[in-house]
Image (cartoon, rainbow, N blue to C red; front, side, top):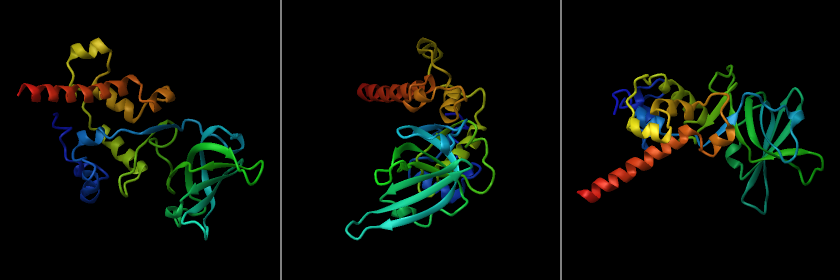
Length: 247
């Protein structure tokens, strides 16, 4: 393994000992492990939908700010529903989170937020639109950086208190340490045979794909970069089994 990839995770910018301990619980100890923690979804944040543009049945990504939020509990049910309203210059969109007790106290009026999900008609209020259990990300008070708007944005599964947003920033910084001459794990002949990108190119692509990338191919993990990394994982798994049988 390259000495760069063997770097311990706690020494990366934005990590430190406490976050390194959380990452270690997921088996992430080195830079190589971190770059192997791939996004589970991608959002097109090059152009956000305005609230006035959303229609029932469509899936949208909306950048807005929190208007109101509150938890509604029901006496005959252990569950609770969190109702969130977000707004932009064109209107207000309501979001509903079932079993949303964990969101109590999470939102404050004026917070900048991105919500992503399918828009449906509210069955109890005709002509009112809502998102049910949308994915969301709070952008914070500071200006959004290039890792979260104006591009196709990778969405990672949070690890404890390390949010998708923080993971994205850590991984973005980590990618800056990848040397152009990063040693490839697959033979050149194999790369040519399957028309695979280099490992460095594949890692850069899957974590921060270029704006022209096809979103459907990304979310189905069928881009050339995804196929190369999946192939690599299975290749070395099969190789380890062959070596074990031989031994």
